[in-house]
Length: 143
Image (cartoon, rainbow, N blue to C red; front, side, top):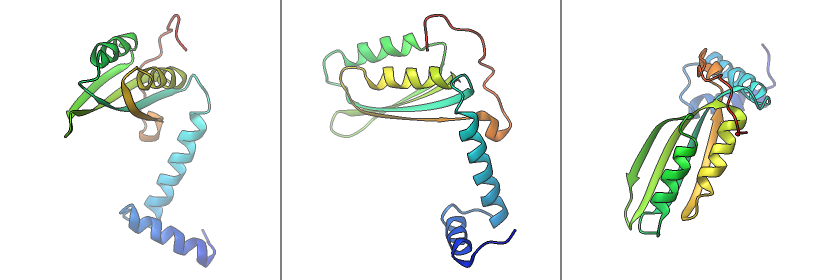
């Protein structure tokens, strides 16, 4: 493969930043990422999601509301991690499996819980690593 010198310099910089073993490793990663993004254009595609939430544990009812929201998405949640931060703040990281649309709906529901100060989410395709979530049964009333 031939690249213009400017593009090659950018690639070499990116290889160094991400600690890739070689240009080939970096290019494979870019191809996988592109294919995963293409797969995720389908709202019914197999997906893995990570949701991060920040809140103050002393906010009235935030824990009760968050627990209720997590139970609404219990079929999809595989793991949660709760971390106590300084200043009575808490972080929660939630791993979800399912269809892309379900993961996005769950993420929006979770970060919309009253008392959550900030939240974000990431969705990816397990196919990038040659895997599947195994989560393909129909759901009623969601998505």
